[in-house]
Image 1 (cartoon, helix red, strand yellow):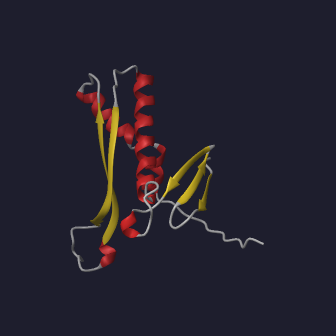
Image 2: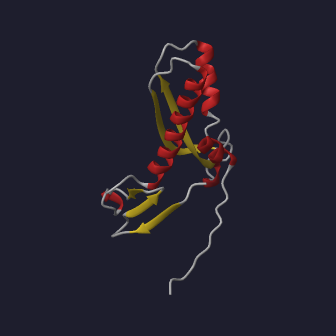
Image 3: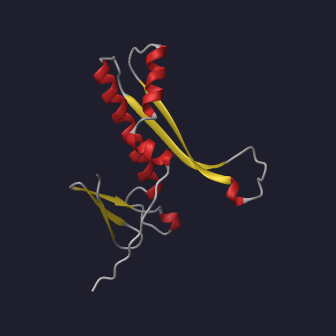
Length: 142
């Protein structure tokens, strides 16, 4: 189970403690941040991209496939939930992540297809597509 602690810094900058590592998150200057780190959506995409690449590398190694470099490019945006039957309704839009996976190595079409299936089994992908419940608890510091 992963555990992360985030502490607010000056302005919008946040210091993230994750497994003995320190990271920063911030917003671009144009929206009031100092651009001291990636924004929260970039961090979310980073988690999915890293998990995808790790999952494919582990699978390729286990199978003994000549899998070379794995590059995962991700974007997040809004898309219509259905064929725009209710385009004027803001609720018709949903968040959508586009993930483009490029793999190196001398792989045949069946291996490439299998890697596409395995990418969907990455734990972060499974969590995001299953939906996540967030349980909040707020505590006042004495």
